Image (cartoon, rainbow, N blue to C red; front, top):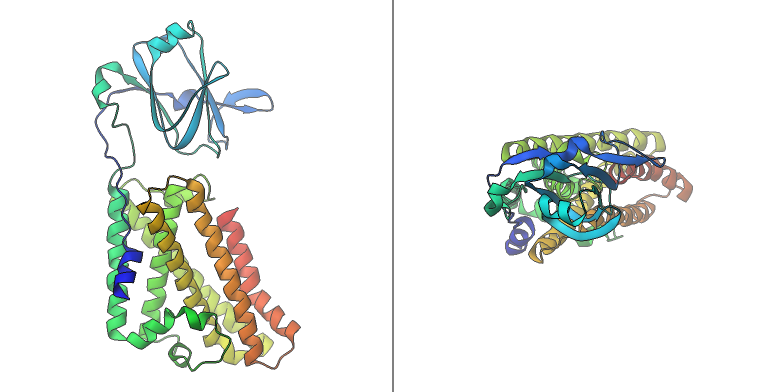
Length: 358
């Protein structure tokens, strides 16, 4: 069990470091985007293509185009290169080849987010293989945060093995039999349960931080949790995890309120603990897939983004089984239980999915 947890939580990712360079000009200030068949100055608009012009002042330098996702370069309307990571082009050679007319366009499959276009001095050619990239702070953060979560989980196993394994029991999650569970029998406000709620919040926060930083252009509001230093990473992780913990508290209040309204007061602890178990199993599945992606050096942003879709699908399946469990525990009409489930599970999940995925 501990070996499996170690494999699931420790994520290995090595990224190139940052080397010194002499940047003559950042061309971002010259970017243009197309709006209604006209070009206008770029000011943060969502666009898959940006345009810029190189004039005589760029001669004697190198054009550097860098991004974490693949991009296509068009010069004077002709596809010139398809590249990922960094592309370096001597401006003098381009000037000669295209006879002094350099109208460039960079196109990507998804809206541009982290693209860089720089003019760099030719005297620093030896440093071109080490262009501005994400530093080791990302892999450092993932490894340290994973170890902290692993240590906390091992501590919970030693303090209360039965309760912790009950939270991790995927069989009980999809079982329709009414079992005498240690979680349901315990108080929600017990210190061990509160500690576990904090743990799942930080675990889910870590997985989301990884997805947000790999695919910031695909997820709305993900840019608020993108970091460029180790300290900033931990501060934003704490912020995101606290937000998740607050949502868990709102979830509990929602269940308690509607259970009184629908006459299902005895189902509060059962339903809330079932949701926490579902959240932990789903997050663990997403973390395992992320580890596999890292092992095989997967570069596709779509695969990491699909982790969110997979998580949502898994939670949807768990909600269906919760409905069947409530049917087995209660003699109330099906429509009554379905209305209760809509108020406490389905509608809140739809709202959350709308905010995160769209």
